[in-house]
Structures are given as C-alpha cells and as structure tokens.
Image 1 (tube, rainbow, N blue to C red):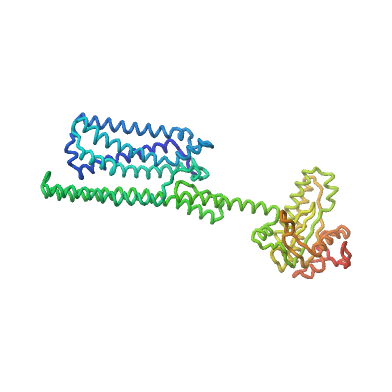
Image 2: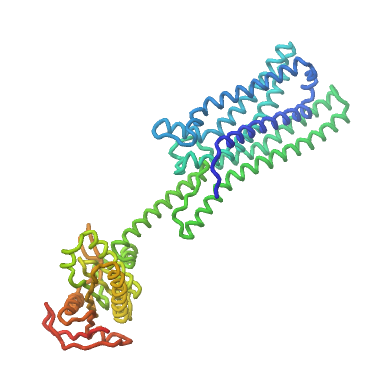
Length: 517
C-alpha cells in the first residue's frame, strides 16, 4: 500500500540537502585554496579568535538570512499545503511551485557571492590587509568554483526531492498551464558538460600557470617542491572532479530516466488495456510535456471508450463495431439472414393492472434474459419495440449457419423465460408468455435514417414475414413458429410439428410454418 505523503519530512529533506551541499562547498573551497592558491591562506591567521569569531558569525548570518528569504517567498505555498486555489492566486502559486529548485539554487549561489564579499573584501578592509589580487582569487574560488558546483548540485538534488511533491500539487499533471520558465533537457546536458569538462580544465590551467610562474621566478618554493606540488594538485583535482562529476551525472541521469521510466510503465499499462492509468508528470521540460501529452491521449482514449461502451448499450456491440469501423455502409448491403421476432402475450392487460415502475423493471429483466440468449447464439438484437424484440442472425457479420443459430436462440429464450417464471411465481407475480417467429431469406442491411439520427436496420420482405409468423402463434396456440424456408436451411432439424399453409397479412402467397418443440 502506498504511504501517505508527509510534507514536513519532505521539507526537512530539502533543508538537509541544502546544508549538505553547502557543507560540501566549504570542503571544496578549503581544498581549492589549500592546493591551488596556498598563498591566499598564508595571509590569513585562521587561529585568531577574532577571525574565527568573524567567520563563524558570518556563516550563521548567511544561513539565517537564506532561511528567512526561503521561508518568505515559500510562505503562501506552505500555507496551501498542496491544495492550491483556483484563479490568479493559484496560478501564481503553481508557478512558484515549479520554480522551487531554481530559486533555492539561486539563493545558494547568492550566499556564496555574499561569502566572497565577506571574506575577500569586508574582512581584509577591516584588518587593513586588502589586496585586489587576493580578492579576485577568493572571488573566483568562492563564486565561480564552489558556488557554481554547489548551486548546480543543490538544484539537481532538490529537484529530485521536489518531484515527489509535484504530483500532489498538480494532480492533473498540467504543468504547462503554470507557464513557468522551462529548463530544457538539452540545456541541462550542456550545463553538466560545461561543469564536468570546461570548469576542471580551467581550474587545472590556472593552477598549472601559477605553479609554472612560481617555478620560473623561484619566489616561494624550490623547483622540486613546485613540481611535486603540481603533481599533488593534479591528483587531488582529478579525484575531486571525478567525485563531483559522478554525483552530478547521477542526478542528471535520474532527472531524465525517471520521467521516461514512468512514461514507459504507463504505456505498458495502456497496452495491457488499462485506460485508467495516469502518468505522473514531475518535470517542467520536454519529458514533462511528453507525459502531459500521454495523459491527454489516454483521456481521449478513455472518453472514446466511454462513448463506445455507451453506444453499445443503445445498439449491439456488433452494430457498434460495424459503424465505428466504417463497415456498416450507408447504402446498405444484401445479406442472407434469419430474422426472429418475439412478442409478449397479454402485455396490454398486464400493463394496465401493474405499477409502471414494476412494468419497466420486469421488462428490463425480460429483455436482459432474451438478449443474453440471442447473443449466446451469435444473434443481434436490432431493436425493442414496446414489448417486442427484433433480432437477426447473419448480419452484420455473415453466418452460414444463421438458421441453426436462430432456432437455438429461440429454444434458449423459451428456456430462460420458463426459469424466470418459476422465480416470478415464487414472488407472487403472474407468469409472462411470449410468441416467437423465425423466417430466413435475403434482406438489405445497413445504416438507415437521417444525417442526425441513424440506426442499423433490415429492409425486405423477410422482415415482414417473420413478424407475421410471430403473430400466428396467437391463432395456432403455439410458442415458436419457424417458416419452411428456415426449416430447409437447418443442418440439424429438431422435432417440429407442421401446420397447413396459411396466408399472412400483407402477403398474397401462403406461408408454410412449423411449430418448434
């Protein structure tokens, strides 16, 4: 079970990432001046109580000031507690939420600039030991080396943590609506490349030039010491650069691979048929845009499936699929089919003596049972007309055994009605009876109607004859009547009782019928 999101613990993780990154920056600064510019440290009396007190107070002041600035601009965001209001206020908060990693990285970089001012300018001016060259060296080490590395690290580390919170702030995944500045994947890669290649080479070049100059001028050390120091410098720089590069590369790789893993996982779920999947959008870049597009696509598929399912409740799934795939031609097509009609007996009197809500409920149960029997045998319910059912076998999909399936469906319908009547008698309700008529032949089948409303229908004499045969059940006292044409089309002939040829309404020629069962 997925654990609940804890905002307080999340905030503390961000705080520790900030403190850890800046502490690492301090160690990087010490290493930089210890091995690259030791002359800068020679002018400092780090054992002085006054200087230690000054730098301790400065560090505390920078931490407190940074904390206050961060709390001030994140105050409204923290008050919202993940549930952001709508309107202009909510839009501003969403934009602020996406800029959290950037702002904290900028805040950290500003802190290193302040540290360069406090250590490289303010303190030397106070102690009357100011040197422009030393100030520049301190500024380069603090701002462009440590400050840059720490700021990039803090951005990547906090972005990784903050991505856990983004889905709670943007449950719909619509990050683009916030209209916040984007850090493109390409830009991210270029920055990492510059940091891992250009910056170390620049530092190494400066250190080499400095040691070469010292070697030529013999100002500070003997040549052997300078060369040995240069070797140590290169080893330390390589090890430190490798460590920093691996950490930053890991963060950048995760920033790209994490959204891709989520997207691939969501795609697999959709492929498996799960249209309720929602891909978490956790980044405001091309990968986040791809996640948003995926969610919109799935939403479209979900809506289309809902329409398809709803459509399938008003027409059969077969007709639905025929229409949606374009196979149900508007001009219709000639099909060899068997048509089945079923009609309840005594329906009018039953309706007059029964509560309307009960009538509707019972009709729904009756139609459900009959529809199941027809579907089980490959048939299609075309329409319900009051208490009457019109069904076809052999359309829209062709079926060479349409007559056999129609007769099997009629028997199944009768069996289901008998079973339901047992339940009705036990509940004190009257039994329901129906008559079924089946006829086979060629019809025109297709989408018929106006441009605004159409239905899949059958047109032809076969439909009319099937309906009239169904009506003969009242006169002959039978339950299921089958035409001679249908009987001749059967591959396996169940027991049937013949009747003399009869003339049906609307037809000159007599029709030969058989009672089934």
